[in-house]
Length: 171
Image (cartoon, rainbow, N blue to C red):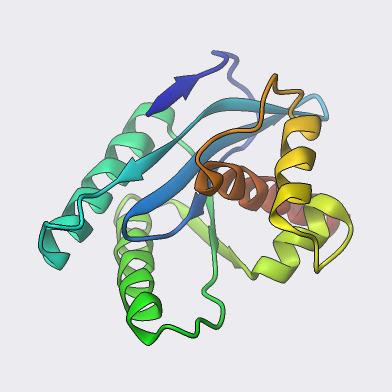
């Protein structure tokens, strides 16, 4: 799914990524004259009956295509957090590794943020619920509805976190 929203080009373009194996959320956000502008967002879905290596290759190829189409200079990728299910953390870690490798090969500057940092940046509260993050993403970008699936809203939040972090670090 790929939703193109605007064609304005200026400033630094950021690719936000919420890594996963079944679903990878992604978003291209750009700050134009102090306003955050959603350029495009969507998700990559892989079929669970495919092999791990096939799914990772599909994720990498799709990330390459997004980079080639939207030309982000910087990327923000959510870091892994503690999972009770060890199988889940391993597969998401593999996906994140494939994503980081792809970004590096495409010469896109990479920053990583913890879920706590993303929540704090977007909502002002590090323990915000998923719904609060989704509502803030919708509000900040003036979207008509909350992006679906949840991974897309998460990717947008990661990109917003990175843009906010850039402002703080450039002061």
